[in-house]
Amino acid sequence: MAESERAGEGKNPARAASAALFRRAQEVTPGGVNSPVRAFRGVGGEPFFVDRAAGARLWDADGNEYIDYVLSWGPLILGHAHPAVIAAVCDAAGRGTSYGAPTVGEVELAELVREFFPSMERLRFVSSGTEATMSAVRLARGFTGRDMILKFEGNYHGHGDSFLVKAGSGVATLGLPNSPGVPAELSKLTLTAPYNDLRAVEEAFRAFPGQIACIIVEPVVGNAGFLAPDDDFLSGLRRITEADGSLLVFDEVMTGFRVAPGGAQELFNVRPDLTTLGKVIGAGLPVGAYGGRREIMDHIAPVGPVYQAGTLSGNPLAMAAGLAQLRILRDENPYPKLERRTRRLVAGLLAGAAELGVPMVGGSLGSMWGVFLAAGPVRSFEDAQRSDAALFQRFYHGALRRGVFFAPSAFEAGFMSTAHTDEDVDETIQRARDALREALA
Image (tube, rainbow, N blue to C red; front, side, top):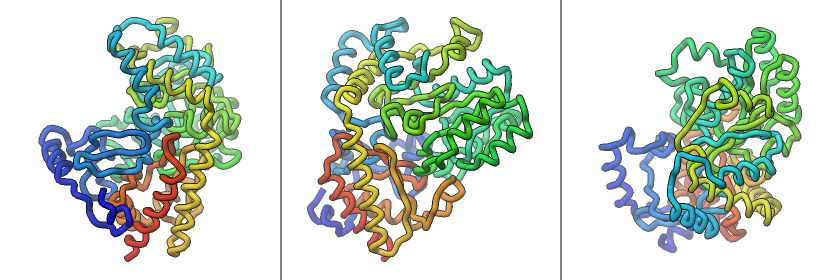
């Protein structure tokens, strides 16, 4: 990227190669992308196409460089192309890419995940976070013999039918309250409540006593922007579910290994019945897992009657990458440094906005963070939707022109990696301040 752009003049970097790729992609793929938020519909304009990445940086097809705070939507705690992860994947690939049979890596990674998450007494690997949440809810229904579930407005648990009712993430970004293709009969089995509203949860359980199989929740929301739970919220969910004989499912696809080594359940000292994890346990490769109490997990086939299967579950490449990343997290404990650097970034962004007189609130837990262009407080998805979307769009593109890649949506959290330096953070704060100043002009 040219020095003038680094200095914050806001000139558009050349993206001719990305533009040509996007035109080609739209001919063969719906919207030109394989996941909706990548189309930049929430911020306008066209996406750039990534050519390569290393550490905390991305380079697009035109050679433009970006400091990356998306990090494949969270899992790259060690940054892009970490040498230990790459070496592990190359070694595994040299011995075969998929077997459809058990491997040592599956056992070793399951044991390591359980070290971090003791509540996952038994766990099953799948191929994505969506598959993990879908399987966990099926298991909850099979274990309890109940059909209804309760989720929270703005929480996103993947694109399973049961979850696309008042969902967050790309659904919120595109302004879609629900998705066509989800049968109305199934939607009726999905109850919703505002996040951080225990009274609404209690009312739902009073209205449907003994009928709700589980509550599924992002314990710290990342798919409606960054939303932290009130002090008594998660423990209140635990109390309500135990009293009713329902299960509590923590969707830690984003928060796992992020807000604390053992996720939100460690940070807030609340033990769920089931936990779901995503590609963080594969260092960004396609993988997920669900697990929990032994007596619940023993309802899964082949031990029990609840069926779930997958040819690529426990894929050896993902197992090897995950072992490499999680061993580093366990042995080197980068969490204090990650947390300090993340707080420094958020404080700098808030200070820059205050200097310019722009309402902005934000926060962080561990290496997960987020800000809203709103006066606050922001405790729920309804609060988040009051953010200044037009200003965010201008700010987003101003930051991108200056080489800072934030999530292309006002409703997504950001992430820090061990590859980010204090210099990266300082540079980001300055570029973001210049972008916000330009957005106000």
